[in-house]
Structures are given as C-alpha cells and as structure tokens.
Length: 140
Image: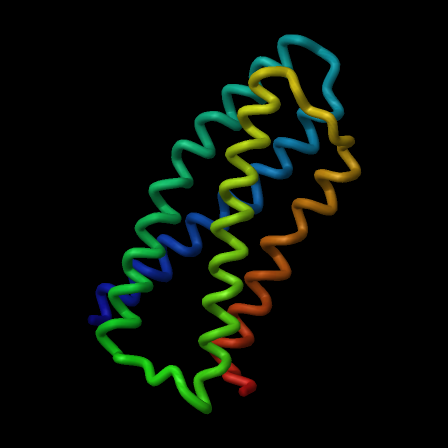
C-alpha cells in the first residue's frame, strides 16, 4: 500500500504543477497581441491540459483506492476528510473550468483580462494549502 500512497502523492504533485502553470499561460495569453505568440500559447495550453488531465484522474483513482483500503470512518473525528473531499471536488471543477478556458482561447473567445487570470491562478494554491493542513493537522 506504500507504493499506492507514493504514486498518489506523485500524481497529485504533477497534477498541481499543471494547475499552477496553466492559468499562468492564460495570463500571458490574455496579455498577448502578437499572432505568433498567441499561436504558441494556444498550443502550449492545449498540450498541457491534455497532459495534466490523466494525471488528475490517476491521482483521484489512487486516492479512492487508499480511502477504501484504510476504511476511513466518516463520523466524528473525520470531519477534516469531509472538508478535504469537498476541496477535491472544487479542484475537479477548477480543472474542468480550465478546460473550458482553453477552448475559449483556442476559438479566440476570451473575455477576461490578465488581472482576472492572476487571481484565478491563486485558487489551487489556497486549496493545496488547505488540503495539506487538513491531512497533516486534522484540525477537526
């Protein structure tokens, strides 16, 4: 089971790397006016979302496997897990929204400013910090 846990952490880390970098590409894309740069950013966004999606799926599958193996009790004392699972759902929605943004940029339908994407870029950082605290500290 240690191998499953190690792989789970590796895939989560890799998925988060994509969740951190893709919105940064959006910032650059929203600021760009040069057609060559825009074409390069479209390609980079497309390749990154296609690469990071399987990483996220594998992280989720392995997380479910770990959860079922350890048979976590979901009563009092495990409320932290409820919150963590809710944050995982937020990450899945965030990832799906990133996919939509990629499609919008690919079709030249972006309506947001680079400043909006700078704030959007911070969401996974906050979710990661909260998840780490929940798993390590188990505050409730």
